Image (cartoon, one colour):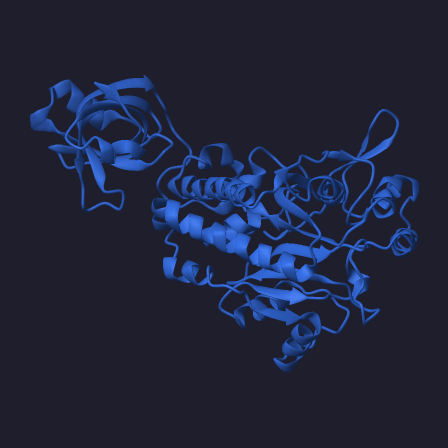
Length: 432
C-alpha cells in the first residue's frame, strides 16, 4: 500500500492508499461519518460508511476530535461535488496523537482571538491558502529573476548606515558600536549591481513603527532588484513585467487556494495586461483636488484614502511618477529640468491595497550625493563606501523594492487590520 499526500490524489484514483492527516472537522448522519482531512498539502473529505467497515472503525471515526492526527487508509475516488475533486473511502483509521479542547472551533472567532492563537490559526483553510499563494510568489520571484539573468545577492541584516532615514530604525549595540536592523538592502545592492550588472535580494526588513493598519509591519520581507546601465523607464518595464508574471503564476498554480479565498480570477487577469498606466505626482494631486480631496497639497505624501482613489481611477496597478524631492530618499536622481522633484515611481495596487513597489533611478553625481548626505544630517564616514561607487566607474542604474506581505495580501484579496504589537510575535509576517 502506497503512502501519499492529499494533493496527489488525482494520480491514485481507484487505488487503496495510506495518508497521514489531521481531523479538521467531522459530522455524521448515523450510518455515515464525514471526516474533513488535511495534511498540509490540501483538504479533502474522508467517507466512513458503517456497513463497509468494522464496528470499531466506525465508532472511532465518530469519536475523533478536532486536530487529532491519524493514519487513514482507503480508496481514492473522484468527487465532482467538491472543489478539490477527490475524496477517500475510508477503510481503516489509526490514531497517532489525540487532541482535546482545540481552541479554534469551526464557529466564528474574532480577529484578536485568532491572532493570539496564530500558531494554531495557521492550520485553517484560509491561512493555508494564503501561505500557498505566498509560497508561489516566492517561487515565481526566483524564476523571473533567474530567467532574466539576475544574480541573487544577500545584503547584511545588521548595518551601520541607513537607506531611508533614522526615525524608524531598530538600534542595537554591536560590540560597543551602533548598528541597525536593516530597513533596506538597497545601498548594498547598488554596490552589487556595479559588480554583476543585474542583481536582486530577498530578505527581511524592519521598521520601528507602531501602527494600527495592515500597511505598516514591524517585520516584512522585501524583494530588491538593482540594475546597472538602466534608466527609470526601462526599470518601470521590468517592474510591470515582474508583477504581471507573479499574478499569472498565482493564476496558473494556486487554483485551489484561490477557490478557498473566493478570489475572482477575472479581476486578477486584468492585472496581467501591460503596460500599466502612468500618472505624474503633479497629475495625481490635481486628480485628487478635482474630486473633493481638500486635505492634500503639492508636496504632501499620499495617505491611504488618496492612494485608494488614485488606484480606483484605473483598473490595473498604476505608477505615480516623480515625487517631490523633499519627501523622498537622499539617493534618488534629481529631475533634469526641475529642482523640486526626483526621478522615482511608486506602483499602487488596485482595490485599496496601496503601494506595493517603490523605486527610482539613483543619483550618480558624487558631489550631489555628498551634498544630500550632509543635508540629511547623515554621517559622511558611514557613507564613504557608497560614495566610492560614484568615484570608480559609475554608470546609470535603477532599482526598486517590492513588499512581499502586501503583495500577498493584494493577490489573496484579504482584509485584516489589527493594532500592531511592539513585539513581532511568532509568524507575524504571515498575516498581512
